[in-house]
Image (cartoon, rainbow, N blue to C red; front, side, top):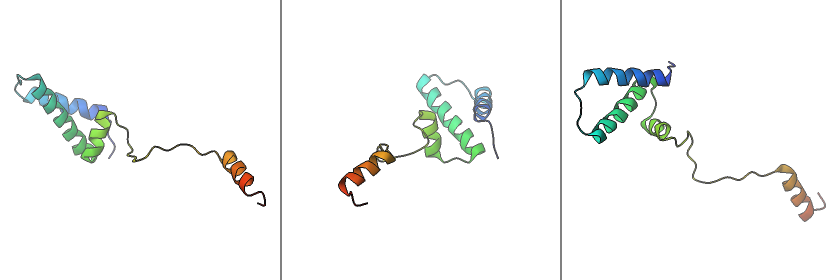
Amino acid sequence: KHFNMSALLVKGYAYHSHHTAYLDSLQDNQRLLLFRLIHTINQEQELAAPMVISYLMGWGDTYRSHHYSPVYWSSFISALLKDFPAL
């Protein structure tokens, strides 16, 4: 199944805002909102919770333990030929 993520979030928020009593604490309201949105995404998209949190926090969709730098092929070949001219 494929769904529009924004539409799912709006649908879940609209349902819970009409069927839930108002919470006095803004922090509790925001925490509950995030929980409900994550639950809505998980229910429809079948995504893992860490992926949902990563998406909501803007951390990207990949996990890397290292930072990579580009290696340019021409520089590699010239360094190789410099050290091994017989090639």
